Length: 76
Image 1 (cartoon, one colour):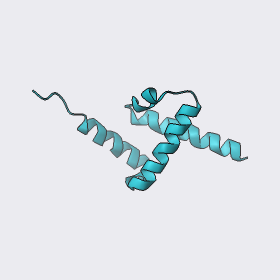
Image 2: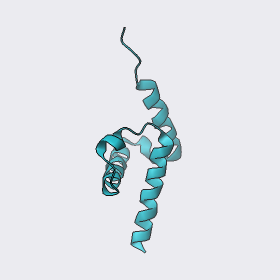
Image 3: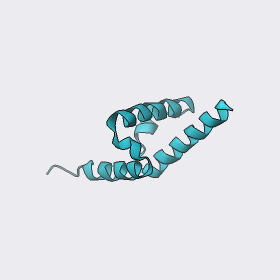
Image 4: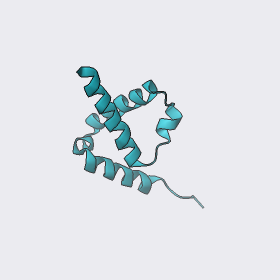
């Protein structure tokens, strides 16, 4: 009647992300880093639709690692 909820998938995704980055359990830290990641994705040519469509937490972590690596390279 109501269809499937995305709540469990979302919960599992957040669990994986917080295991990789425990600081993301803090909502303010998570939202700040989420904004950084979205801006990075846009900067490298991704659309918001593509970014919001990512459902695999491993892909989010790969994008995060890429962003951090590029920040380190630019700082040198």
